[in-house]
Image (cartoon, rainbow, N blue to C red):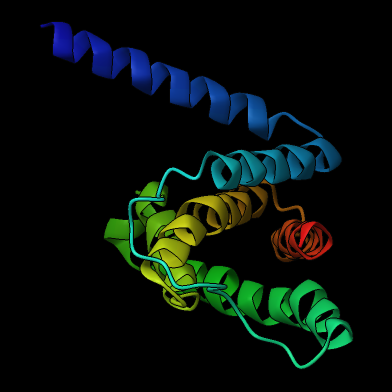
Length: 165
């Protein structure tokens, strides 16, 4: 009985957060998604997983790192891991009614592409994959340029990482 009540409380909380996020302007939505990514990354919840020193993409120069991580990667990864995967999943009746599964599939594919280490991939799954998949689904339902909203979140996130490193 208590367990069922707790599930209902959690479900209501998630639905409330979802409603509040959907009601934000695009600017504030992007800011909140970046803040969520930052908090997940800063909490370092996955430090018990194996990691490799300097796990992540390697670049020839700082200039290449900036161009590739802030512009090129978000362009192609948004196309592949959000637009194409989510669009394909939308054609499957079982998934079409379960957007959370579509977001998880998109996030798994996104994390798989970032398999520099297990810790890195798991962190990317939560701080990037879930966020970007969710953003795509929300803005697709709003019919307000989901590709460019996700590209913006991804690009700004990579820029923030670039600046902080």
